[in-house]
Length: 230
Image (cartoon, rainbow, N blue to C red; front, top):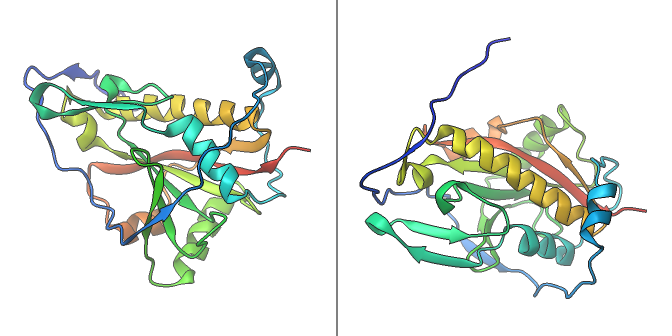
């Protein structure tokens, strides 16, 4: 097995603002306000967390919104050196760059669309697709790795321009961010008594081709989420 060694990232002496990838969002879908919850104690969540993959009960739109709010929302932003953007979210990120965007497939609403989570405003951007065949083909690709059944897919897409604005050799940061983001989502899902399992699949090739990713944009995994654990 070949091991690819990534160069260590170094902060740039002069950070620079770089253009980020345009997902060509055509509309906005509001998300319900987050539910006030009585959370399980952290030690109990850590003790019971495990990968769950039955995916029998579909998520509700409220559950999906709550999951993203508690795991992935933007809490604070600031403009820092070189007019680059620093953000604070529940999950840590190298330099506060947060290069990973969350694309949602088979959401509880608009299942024939791609949804992009806008963490700054807690809404979904809607990306039109030419036909249902593309969504079906994408889900078939995922099923070869892990059967989605009634689950909702959250695909992690890294845009290195967000990290390259402040780091040289930012590639490894995207993979580290992916791991801690998956852990954060997994713990929130466990606290909400939702089923969650990480995906070994990095890219969804049919969607990657459709969205016309450039060399700085690539999939870094994701997860499947479904309704309440019995």
